[in-house]
Image 1 (spheres, rainbow, N blue to C red):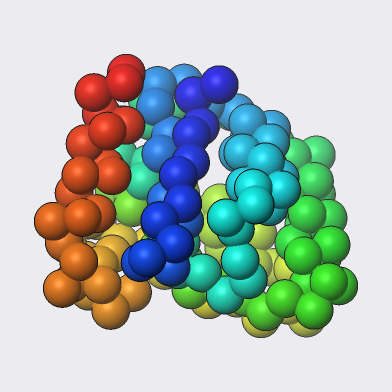
Image 2: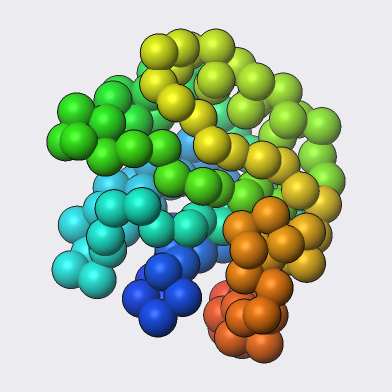
Length: 143
């Protein structure tokens, strides 16, 4: 599966990395797996690192599955988590806009940023840059 995650409870951080060609279903699968992870808690800071993703296959059906996943998360009493999406792709921005339209009524707390330093700044994790760089590097080495 080219969408991986790790959780750093000390930083209260859930970090996803997408490598190579990915599908929307793989993103949803990784999100569901992370939800079941015993280290996972509500209200974590989240980074989706899409910089190493080469292609994304996402359709309307997958968008609906993502909306269902978020609705389930919301119905459990969880709020929207602050999420930085690292991408330089205009497609990611358009996809996020579509997703936000489909999740009307849910609070969203997402921002697309061009790089890791911008993500860390937005998430107020700048002081933890060395630790997050190690997390990111671990995914890069495992390609």
